[in-house]
Every structure is written in structure tokens, then in C-alpha cells.
Length: 432
Image (cartoon, rainbow, N blue to C red; front, side, top):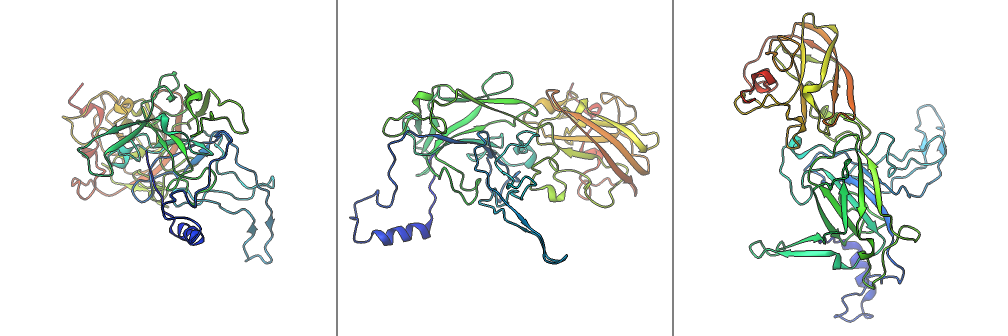
């Protein structure tokens, strides 16, 4: 895939220095020449695939190789109690217009924003949740894996498909030749992905790692959301085919043969307003209802509680146990099914990658999700303990939710889209 970034100030300065020394036909003037050394794999980035201003992101960019230079730091004590402390750590880049955490640690080193947290690699929310179609920036999985080399690779690794029916400038589609790279899931099966070569970017410097990512790079973009708590493996199927334009075979960082594989493990099932990297929509409590970050959380008797997750959840296998209040209630946990009983199924759609990744909670006539019909919440304060597994049963999310039921039922979805009629329960679905 071809990208061009125009740094006007830099190019103008270079052009000025070259006046009188380079002929008009010299198209390489101002470009640094390739070294004779073979290309090295310097980063294996896992980051958000989406660009700013359109998609809510997690502002995550992590490096499997974990080779970022450590930087020592100090914290200067404030002169007075009202003055701020001075931290000598400085942000070198942004991620989706967000400054990553580089604060000075107690060890005397700056926090490394590239380092994968102990909780695992974060998974961006699905396009289904955000409600927009896939495109070349994100084919559906929300993740971009960038295998960054320190010099341009020979374009023999690319396949070019031409479509003359498309507008000028978009007729060519670039993909990686088969048998070079693949991403495997926890079962060792290839993950359907868009894989291409991006010959742009710098292997060391970027103002924003998402808007102007590091490169040149081989890019893997999964077509579906990655599973929670799952080990994924990047396989170099034919590393000898990765060469520079002089035929030098790519090496690992520091020399030596490229690794045959690189692995990472995703985080446990995580709500969109939580985790090491919450969604940048989390200022309004993510995609949840009600806003549990508010000082007082209230719902009407026929409101449905909704919790969105980054990964796919088995909503119907979740539980909600009354901890206090809610006398006589039978809170039912289930996967969101929409508002049309004739179009939804009694079977849990959580395992379907195209399903809406939201878990609903409402009061039922019984404690059985398969048979419980909707009934209003009892009035007053209520605290429930909610537990939801991911679709593969590898991890569980558990948390307490406290709210107050007050007011009267609202029946107009234009005034309140969170009423039960707009979030039908499994037993109300017409299809088996």
C-alpha cells in the first residue's frame, strides 16, 4: 500500500540547500542513500488501526520486541506546596493525538510507553460497536501489526491488482505475496487479515505513531476483533524473501537471522471504559448505560443496563447476583439482541464476530435467561455483582454495579432509547 506524507517545511529547507548543486532532473536529490548493511527488523508494533477524528480509539501502540531505549529521570521537589513537581521525562510522540504515559518511575527511569503491560495487549472496540463500515484503515479488527524495518525492502514482496473501473489514483491494490507472513490464532489457524507493505515512514521518529506510523513496514490488519486472553503468533513463513533493493536478506535486530515467529497475548475480557487503555469515548463512560462514573446513577423501572466490551463476550452465560437492595428482583444477563423480536434469535449471538458487543441486564420473571420475560426493576437502591465470560471461556469480567431505580416507565424510545422494548430479552425472540 502506498502512502505519501508531505513535510513542507523540511522539504523546502532541503530544496533551498540544493539550489545550484543539483540538476532539475535529479529526482533523488535530498534523499538519504541506502546503506550496504542488510535491513533489520527494529520494531514489531501492535497498535490501533484507526485514524483520529473518525473512530474512537484506545491510543495504544506497543512493541513486541521491547527494545525501546531506557531513559533515566529525576523528579525535582517543588519549592513550595503550591508549585508542581518537575518530572524530567519528556514525551517524544503522540498516539492518536494523545500523549502516552512517560512519567518518572521510582526506579529512576521513565515509563516505557512501548512496553506491553502485564494485563496483555489491548484490543480496540469493534466497528460494529462504533457503527461505521470497514475501510482500508480498518478492515474490522481494529488492530494494525507493523513489522518495521530500518530501510526500504524490495517491492518484489508485493502483488499489484489493477481495477480500471476505479477513479485515477485508486486503481491499484497492493498486497503481500502469499507464503511470506501470517498471523495465527490460539489454535494455530491463520487469522483472516489484510496484509500489505507500507514503504513510507521512519523507523525511529514520528510525531504521532497512529497518524504517521513507524515504517517502512509489513502491515497485518485482522478482519475480525481479536479474542480475549488469547496467544497470537506472527509467523515469518519465508524470511529469506524479505530483502532490500540490493538483495541483502533482512535480519533480526543487531544481526542474525529473523525469528521464525513472534507472539503476544491479548488482555482478558475488558469493558470499553476500563483497562490499561480505555476507549477515548470513555469520558462518557464508554458506550455504557447508565453512566456509572456519575456521582448518582439512576434508571427508570423499565431501563436496561448496558455494558460494552472490547472483545466478544458470551452474554447469555453471564450472571448478575443481587448484593443489596433489589428485593425480589431476578437480574438477567444476556447479549444485546436489538429491538425487533422477529429478527433476533434465542441463541447467544456473542460468538458471532458481527454481533453487537454489548451485554444487557434487566429484571426477569424468573432467573432463567432462556425463559425469563421482562418485568420492571423494583424501586429503590440496588447493587448487583455482574460476571461475564469471554466467548472462549478463557477469562471473566466481574464488577459490582450500584444504581437507584426511580421515576416512572418511559415508553417513547425517542425520549429514552434504553427502555426494554428497544433491547428485547432472549425469551422474547421469535427465532430459535
